[in-house]
Length: 209
Image (cartoon, rainbow, N blue to C red):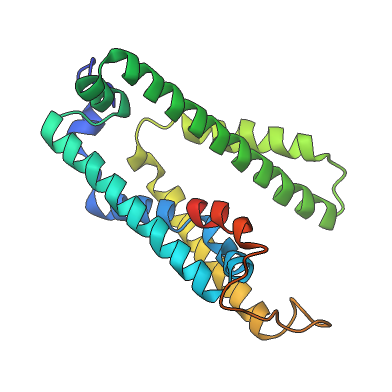
């Protein structure tokens, strides 16, 4: 559907309903990475974390504005198409390889996270299953079938479930923070303005979140 060489598919022509598009985009923006923001702020300090968060926000706005302007000007909606029309086929090939490697890395990281969470749940409820088996089951029975969906509109209910799950986890994390269950013995961590020693720990989190 995103290739500039093939005719647009029906789902691309008709587009998503506004409610489904808003839900899907919100779920993508408010991903699970938002739950790691407190650790990022604790690693960089209040002012350091806010400064880096604003920098990442401005960088995201700038790059997304360029992509939207290119799409409107060139009439193409893929990285390959934009790179081919602006920098030639060879650069477009490397851009497509870069996007592919980035997405493969993201998929691998999500599978690892899903395996860790599902294995912890299995151990809690006394299920004798390895983490590798949990990962294989999730990929085979959930991730792969959903990846074969004909369009993003098909995933709108899954996006609503994901958004509700993120909000629920955020609520639970906030409640557990305020009731002291995260740090019963040591107390809440001290938050400095800047923490140069651990500043680098927060950058991947803020970029991913």
